[in-house]
Length: 188
Image (cartoon, rainbow, N blue to C red; front, side):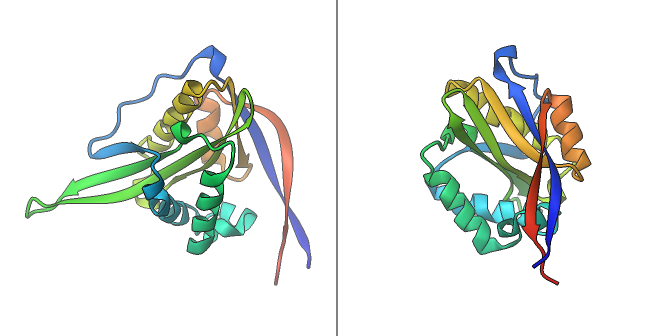
């Protein structure tokens, strides 16, 4: 099978310099800390966030609901899993009959990869909820969780074609450590 290479940036945030000031949480949204009972909710949001995106080509499990569940299970069972850096965003809306409906719409996970280094995994916001600052707020909650866990440096990777995410991470204070390439077998 032919192989294609995706250009990605490995970025880092230095928690020793402090956290950026977050924007206010938009009305109707809340951030739920990790609980094992939320694993399936994280997986569904991950799937909704990535299924039609380039990252689902780079990491095919992101384009498959079952693949997202397997990935969430794998992340949450890793020895370095950091529950304090793992969050779910939920949106509440009230209909005309005054009934409240809840929709999960954002997810992020954190893993400790060295004693003082953490790695952000899969920041995802469902399409209908983008453009409201939820991605920045998820990153803030994740970084705060890493800080509470004693981590000093936090890394993430972003595909170079995802210019919106790349600019967001730069704006939040991440700097590029290096360029990496992810090889993916392509079937025609």
